[in-house]
Image (cartoon, rainbow, N blue to C red):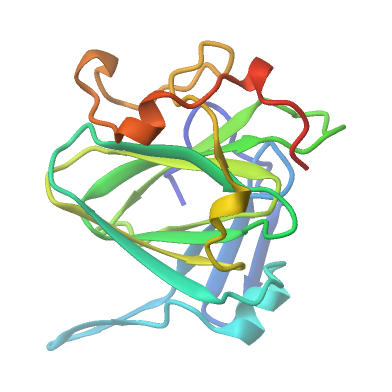
Length: 203
């Protein structure tokens, strides 16, 4: 796997395999970058994108209860950084159906030695990688190509009362989104999210 960014690649020994799935950790405990086996023949490609037995074996034990999908027409679209607090926190399993994104997870776990740090991965339809983001992390992505479609599973239903976020461009986070911040496209909601220092305890 070659799509980890920002020097946060985990040691090569932190690789877990089960069935058709290979998972590799980052320099921050919790998130995983996943590759699944591709079966190719003259017709095209078949991919088993989720298998509960194999994903559990590599450390992803949540029950996913909702599937979401987004289409971002313009490159430079930012969605995030989002998360849900208890009693409805969400783990996520993210993949790209078309196009390419820089996907980000920020550690918000109270007492974590990596609190406020992030990990990043490039996900694309071409590389077929998936990003597992456990509970306790904020998540967001920036599209790198037009008409990018992203699909992700979550482990809790959407709960408006638990919905939270932090500013994508908070200097304290030091995130390189791979886009020009001056031309980033955001929702009105995402433009007014608080910075990390103003957030208070979440997990």
